[in-house]
Image (cartoon, rainbow, N blue to C red; front, top):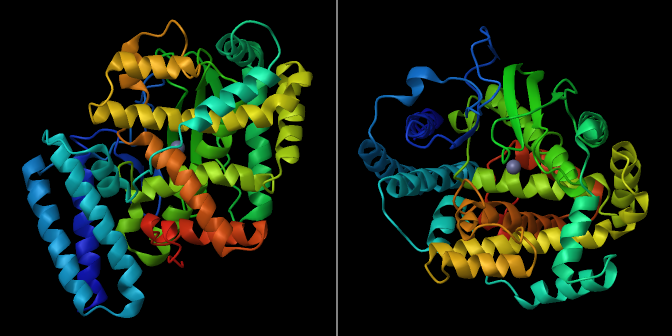
Length: 436
Ligand SMILES: [Zn+2]
């Protein structure tokens, strides 16, 4: 069969995905509608997040969830049939499409009320199953923090106090966010082939929901430019570590760079599947995992370089006690392990192994949530199912893959750029067989 037949199947996948967003409002992370797009009216909210960042109008209408379920099942079969006589160079693209159509189908099942075990859910949505975590790591990091952190009292109290002392004062937030955004923009420019026109405008404002870290407004895009405005919430509890995470991960060289590359790839190839990044898919697991790992690449994986950056750019501008900066490597290690704590909690709640109270007690034991937090908070650790598998575990899959197939950080940057433009495979990265 011809490439036109495969393109038609890819277009069907795209149409079904857009239609599903009517029932699944956070599913579309990025969508390229055409070669360019401009916001032409000021009728949008600066208070509430709308995903995608612009209205896709009738593209999301015309199919029920049952239609999407049926059509995605047939589409998977058609793709498998096509694969039987496909050219070898089409294999990666077909695997990618099957992977994403299976995710779409699974998500439709979930939206229709079907339940399934946690690991099956993450396997079908993200092409990943997180292995059981080594729980002794939670106790070991707690002991290390108890030894290292200043103050007296319980280790949990020391953690809460440290978190308070590395919090960014509200009146310094704009300067911290602006300087950090510029620094990550420059690091991305130095290592990748980018247009350089996509550094977002940074604003700070008070958003109605204190749990919302930021609100993004897309003003337009074309091949050479993403025009984004990022509004960071003054009322969000910003600490040094989540400033780094948020800027490097959400913007450049993380998600915004990925969206820029995807948009360009779509325009270059006309492959319909490149137009969209679904939240509940392996593309999302790749962008989430790599957006975390790429922060480490910015500092050549050097803990010293990252700490120096935090000390000079964030502690300095925020007016925090620079003497605490030397504790940041241990703190980052704690944050990574805490992410796995949340993964374990969401898995055990989903599979009904732990009650809300048991899960909350576990998180309080490691000071991952506040000591006064209600038990029901465990149900709101993330807005998206399998979040910590698609973020924390995906980061470690990306890390191991990059470490095993490259021999220098420069090669890793080239690899990252290539995968952003290609048909990635999370299971292929996990078993190290994937080659872009
Ligand atoms: Zn993200």
